[in-house]
Amino acid sequence: MTIAGHRTASGEASPVTAVSIGVPRRTLVHTKIDVRAVGKTFQVRGADRPFTALEGVDLAVHEGEFLTLVGPSGCGKSTLLDLIGGLTAPSGGEILIDGRPVTGPGLDRGVVFQQYALFPWRTALANIEFGLEAKDVPRRERRALARHYIELVGLAGFEQRYPHELSGGMRQRIAIARSLAFDPDVLLMDEPFAALDAQTRESLQEELLRIWEKTGKTIVFITHGIDEAVYLGRRVAVMTSRPGRIKKVIEVAFGSREGDLRADPRFGEYRHEIWTLLRDEVAAAQEQERTLG
Amino acid sequence: MADTLATPTGHRPRTGAASGADVTSVPGPASGPAIPATATTAAAGPVTPAREGARRGWRAAGARAALWLRRSLALALLAAAWELLPRTGAVDRVFVPPLSEVLTAWYDLLADGRLLEHFQASLVRSLAGFGLAIVLAIPLGLAIGWYRPVADFLSPVLELFRNTSAVALLPVFILIFGLGEPSKIIFVLYACAWPILLNTIGGVRTVEPLLIKSARSMGLGSLRLFRKVILPAAVPTVFTGIRLAGAYSILVLLFAEMVGAKAGLGYLIQDAQFSFRIPEMYAGIITISVLGLLFNLLLVSVERRFSTWRTSS
Ligand SMILES: Nc1ncnc2c1ncn2[C@@H]1O[C@H](COP(=O)(O)OP(=O)(O)OP(=O)(O)O)[C@@H](O)[C@H]1O
Ligand SMILES: [Mg+2]
Image 1 (cartoon, rainbow over the protein chains, first blue to last red):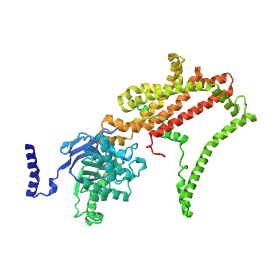
Image 2: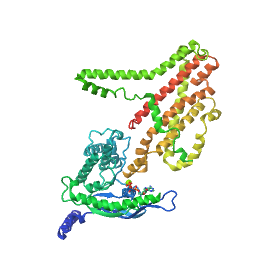
Image 3: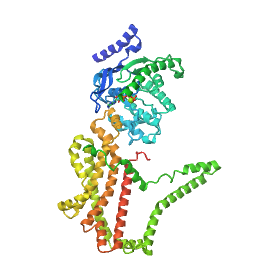
């Protein structure tokens, strides 16, 4: 009785205050991933001092948000993704997911790697089942879920193919399906479409947006493509050259997302803004590489 | 020292698989060209499906026969030379009797049961040694490949023994285990264990790091990671080692049987030579070759069953 009463009280409380104060909805959203002053150094063989890949990274990713991350090559994007994924530990600062510090990898986050890390000895379907096995989902349910997700990425009929019998785009779709199948709250994607041709990439981008809208997952998506960043991201985070920090986070707001977004004049403006931010950083990164030898 | 064990020198899985495929693979022509062929006939004019199907069947059969012919031609030439050269006197028929005489001797050996007896003796020894090597070397290799402390502990000893030829140790085995079966089986076991061990270690250590990372990202613990990723990824490499060991098991056994034995194909060959029953000697050699060939074919087909997922290149 008391529990039920408590629940209704708090459940009604927040929307009421939100409306009465008149704050825009956006500021109310819950922070899913909170990266606080994170640094990462690597011990390099033969070097006398550690190599700093990331320094003072601050980034808050909202629940259900699609955030794209751009930055010059070698600035530490993949390193940041590994940290959020819990695959490595930060050298400084902290990363919180739902307010709790990340202590290791977990099934609340799904990682899609750039080089389609599918298990070559497993069929497409069995690859999708992998995370479900890790989650101890019973066999029959696993099968059914895997079938559902292979359909979702448009690969029904390819269940029994081995990865080497699939095209690059198909493999990447299986990798995405595998990460979706165990139903993580957060999807971390590292340049997943980089190796694909323009047509395949565009169709996968649309598919991903469709899936995102349907599932409401929080997505962090690394890309080299400014167009891709603007097209997919509701916000675009631009990183500095190494040691990487977040230089600026740009809010991408179109009136409507119907029709050809790329033809919208604002698309060009966002594109140009990010391009300008990146230009200086890329130049700096290249200078750095030259002096590093 | 630990690092030198990491790569299975001379037993690279790729080359191993390729050489294995040479023996039995039927590359394409059986069914492959049938598709473009029908495409051209269809373009040339209307062809009824039935006739088209029949033609495709004929073509496939023809291609298969041609392939079979090409593959057996060299063998046929060798057999012909073996038969004719001694008869024409080009080679001394006392030392190299014509093939027909060798085959007659082989048949006689088979008929009086001696062949079976020697064959059985050899087969039991090589299978016992080979089987024991599999049972011992795979777990050991997995442990060394996966657990750094085990590798650090065992590597120096393994490095030392790896560079000690099995042949050099045969007298030791005979001294310790006597002239009977145990010394021969242990000798085969010793020789067979190396390719399996080294390939298993290499297989475990060379698992694509990205796959491990990918599995870890899904929260897999150490034990599950080993069972679900490391083990299946290492299977093809382990099998390459097993196939090499299979070949070794017969090669080295023959040597042991020539040194000290009362039965076995090695003994048969040696004994036939000493007592100048030359056709019998060749009959023994042919038997051992065919045995080796069959053994390899068997292992290749088993290997293929276990690694269908590998890119067929
Ligand atoms: N394990 C490691 N040991 C040493 N240095 C590393 C390691 N991993 C990454 N680095 C270094 O950290 C820097 C950032 O690497 P990272 O892979 O995160 O870059 P990135 O932004 O993803 O680049 P790209 O866009 O080219 O993928 C690089 O300079 C790289 O050399
Ligand atoms: Mg990267």
